[in-house]
Amino acid sequence: MPFFSIIIVSWNALHHLKTYFPSVAATEYPHYEIILADNASTDGSKQWIRDNYPDVKIAEFDKNYGYCGGNNRAVPHAKGDVLIFLNNDVRVEPDWLDELAACFQKNDDIAAVQPKMLWDEDPSYFEYAGAAGGFLDTFGYPFCRGRIFDTLEKDQGQYDDESDIFWASGAALAVRKELFEEIGPFDEDFEFHMEEIDLCWRLWNMGYRVRYCPESTVYHLGGGSLPMDSPRKLYYNYRNNLRMIWKNSSARSITRQFIGRYFLDIAAAFKTLSDGDLESLKAIYRAHRDFWKGFHNTYQKRRLLQKQREIEENPAVMLKKTIVWEYFIKGKQNIQRNI
Image (cartoon, rainbow, N blue to C red; front, side):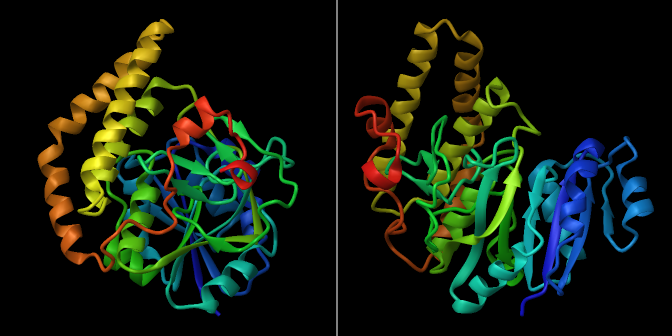
C-alpha cells in the first residue's frame, strides 16, 4: 500500500488550521505523514501545531512563497510514495486515503488522483475548485464535472463513476512523488492558479493518466487565498491560461487553440468594458501585457516540454467543443446531460 505525504501549505491561516487540520490528523489510513509547509507565518501557526500535533513535520520557510513555491520546497521533506497537496481549508473523511490508495494500485500509468470535492459550507453541492474532476475545452477554458463557470450542481450521485479527468484540483491533488520530481515541479512563474492544470497536462503529454476517485470525499471551503471576484484572481487566470496553452498544446493544435483563446479574451475585455467593470478590464489588460513580457521564458519551456512529450495530439479527455458557446449561447449548464 502506498505511503502518503500530505503537504499543507499555510501562511497566517491559524483560523483555518484550527478548523480543518483536526480532520486530517484523524485520518485512519495506517501509512501517511503530514507536513506543514509554513510560508513564514507570524500568527502562531507553527507553535499551535507543535503544541497539539507534535508528530507533524514542519517545513519552515523564510518568506511567503505562495502555493507553488511552498509546495515545491516541502517536497524534499516528504518520504512518501505519493504526495498529497492539500489546502489548509479542506476537511476530510477518516477513510479518505483508503480509496485513493486503491486507485493508485490499479494501474501504474495512473499518475495523479483527485477525490470528490464538495463545498464545506453546503455539502449537498459540489465545490468550485475541483468538484468531480477538471477538464479543458477546445480553447483551454477549465471547467469541472459539477461546475461550469459559476454554476454549481448538487451532488445527486451523477458523478459517482471513477473516470479519467484532464486535471485534478490543487486543493486536494494526489500525485506519485517520482513523477512529480521527474515532470514537475509546479511552475513557479504561475504564482497562483492553474499550476495544477499545467502539471496534469504535462503528465498526460508524457503518457500518464489523471483519475477521479468518487469513493474518497473531501470538503473544501474555497476562496481562502483570493476571493472569487477578485481582479487579482482574474489576472492570474487569464495570464496563466495563455502560458499553459503555449507550453503544453500539441504542435497541430497550438495555433488554433492559442488564437481562439486570445480572441475570446479580447471579447471578454469588451464585455467588462460595456458593463463598466474597469477593474476587471485592467486585470485582463495586465494579464496579456505580462504574458508577452514573459513570452521568451514560456517559449523556452515549450521547446523543452515538446521534446519530452510521448503523445502527439492533445489528450483525448480534452473537450472538442467550446464551453463558452455551450454555456453562454446555448444555455447548457450541466455537463453530464447536455455537453
